[in-house]
Length: 294
Image 1 (cartoon, helix red, strand yellow):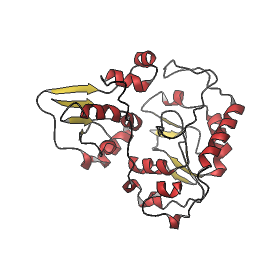
Image 2 (cartoon, helix red, strand yellow):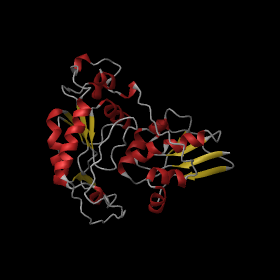
Image 3 (cartoon, rainbow, N blue to C red):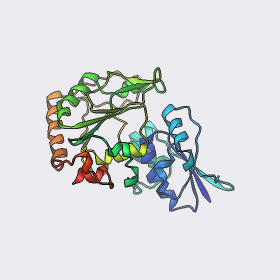
Image 4 (cartoon, helix red, strand yellow):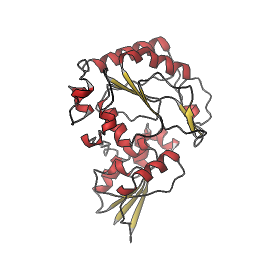
């Protein structure tokens, strides 16, 4: 029997669902995955199928990667698995990752979310970045009209900017967004950066390669998926909130003195092994990730 996995649409969720895809690959001879991000599964022997979506970034990527889709379609007896999580599932299991595993019948021990980042994902425009300091990739705060919860999920604007500015001078900053008039816009204006890719021009592969070679990522909740092997710093509100409401009005206030101290210490740790930075002309074809690690 084949299995048809009806995947989620967000890029981050699609990375996390790799654990589920890998589990079902061990159970079935054929695995089909509906996804707008077929490139996230290029290392796995699955058949990717387009999924109709009105989401702008996802539809744009599906068009960009249409050659990666399989012409094969599931026939006969097909088991359908929908990748999803619910608020009740999160409360029951303690995390949305476990809630997703529970919802798809995947054992809680199957947690291989890894995604290889090959050197071929380092395109010329990424390798040619004129960086002379360790790289920080930053996500400016955005709002969009596809989902009303973006404003609720975003941190307090002034706090986010102040935290960013407290460490900005130590890094070569690359800002990433996919802006379009009346569809997605900066909530609080641009952050001070050295290079801005704000038109959605970077492929996921380029973003993954850039992230893999960066010293630090600075992002709002829900944008970046942490490397399980890398350290991370989460700055939470003084009173954490788990109401799951798109119109939540609970306080976003944080302990600013503590957050500034923790962020300084964390950035120090990130920079500890990044002191000798080659000039752009010295970057070898193996890519930015290797150059930064030297």
